[in-house]
Amino acid sequence: MHGDTQFEDLIREHQGFVFRTLVRLTGSREHVEDLAQEVFLRLYRGLENFRGDAKVSTYLYRITLNVAQDEWKRCRREQTHLSFDDPDAGWEDRLPNAGGDVERTLSGKQMMAGLERALGELSEAERQVIVMFHQEELTYEKIAEVLSLPLNTVRTHLHRGRKKLKERLQEGRRPCATTA
Amino acid sequence: MRDDGMNCEALERALHEGRKLTTEELAHVESCDECMDVWLTLALEAKPGVVIPENFAARVATGLPARQTKRAALRSNRHWGLITALAVLTLLMTVGFGGSPPVNSWIGLVFLSVVATEIAGLALWLGPRWMGR
Image (cartoon, rainbow over all chains, first blue to last red; front, top):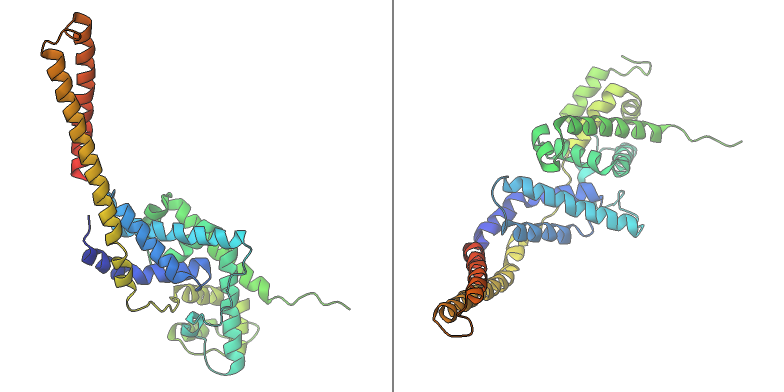
């Protein structure tokens, strides 16, 4: 269906989305390149039977979520500690409250690490909806199409997911019970 | 304005403007529902900084031709399968309707017609699908 040059262009166009989504959904940067390669290989194989009744991007989003889900399950199975506090992760540095004096930076980073942990504790669907809506700025309609879910379910996942994140971030702040 | 003396509107503005927050401001964000909402949205909207190798697309694309060749070989095998099916069909028709004694009976003709129709049907049904791939 596609020539190699066309497919290469397709990869260039979507690689940012694929890498970012994999990092956010798996909570790790360790194998992200291999996973991204897997996504595009699955896409290529799938394009042979692609009938064009959906957009290629929708198909790619689905594959990316599936690959991230497989990796997430594999990590859980192996009980690997996911690197939510990965010191190489640099995305918290891009946040408004990062930088500045050490205490401030530490505090901001702690909040970000807490958010990453909280994201990891959400259900698969909640995490996927939150990442697609906030990070990738997809519409409710598009998310519903990608996940094959009714529109209202997407809204519910987003609402519940955000609520849980807030609760967990605020719980994390509560002082631990001190023993006498 | 809250008990801790923080002005939520000012703090939300600071968050949107990207100003660095003090420890006290961050503590307020964690305890205030409205400010936490704003912080959460901004944190989730921040795209993770990922480094994509410069030649990633080219590298993935160059891994594809081998599979294409394999697919072409498969298609070629299927093409030969179709030709064989048509050859068998022609042979059956020639033998069946050509008048050779063992097959040229009433039962033999009906049997042969059924087989020939089935093969022809299969060839017509599968042919365009295989050739079109």
